[in-house]
Length: 382
Image 1: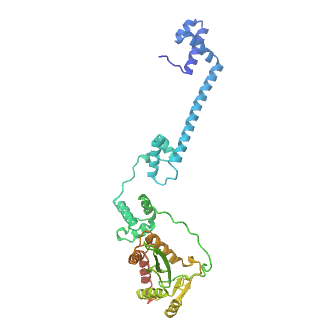
Image 2: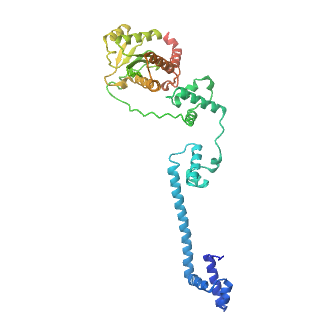
Image 3: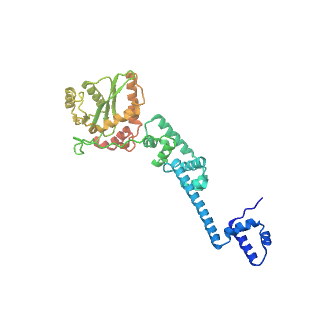
């Protein structure tokens, strides 16, 4: 098999042959010593016989090496861009997604482990480390979070955390926000974030004009909420809340309401709580502006705080309550009869007052907040 000489070897043999010729050796002895044919000798002599040709050959070899190096760099850069565009479309915030990205880069693009780790910013030692073992406490915590998500599909991780803090089993456990949010997302329970609402302004919306509740039963807000049964018939819910404690005092479903029905509901609330509200806040609906309700308010010593027409943001507490009621209960239920509507309304009222944590109450439920306020202000009440 013919042996292929490198340019360096050819130049060395040419110089050896020229030296032998200068010393007087015949050509036949030179080509025998170099182990080449006479044609090969003259071809080598033509290409590498002079210093200029040798320097040109050396420069050519250097350019070829540089070209190969640049081609490799370009190929690596193109591969890195492909990996970043396909595998790492976002920022990795935890180790496991980084491991998955490295494995995907190796399988899909054929990249080496070293190259994939360098492109994705993954430490190779951390890549070989598996996820830490799950402790019994964390496994139980994840089980409880899944149970909460099944029972209350519309809740997020914040309400789930407050709900766990209220349970004696988790008293003293490290249930900080970062841990609960991490486990909530690992379980695939992430809810769609709420869109930030623009603060509306309008007549009577200034802080100096707004009436703020200072204690329980100071200001009651009420409003109607509409829905339909499975047969397509209209149904209305009369919702009443206490603005200070956010307590749902009534959720009454009926086909229609009159001013007398509104008065009956308010009298039931007074009988149940044992106190009369100072103000009632509502819109300017015909049931709320009727002479019968106005006369009852004058007789009971209750003042009215009507919002401006076309300004529902001035009655924000009950509007927010209506939105939560629809999102957490009405949207997921099909109502067939009025009896079923009454059951669903009472069921969610109990959950809202006694189980559902409220963000504006530091994670407490409305009933707990009302009881705590009563205990702290017992002397003032007496």
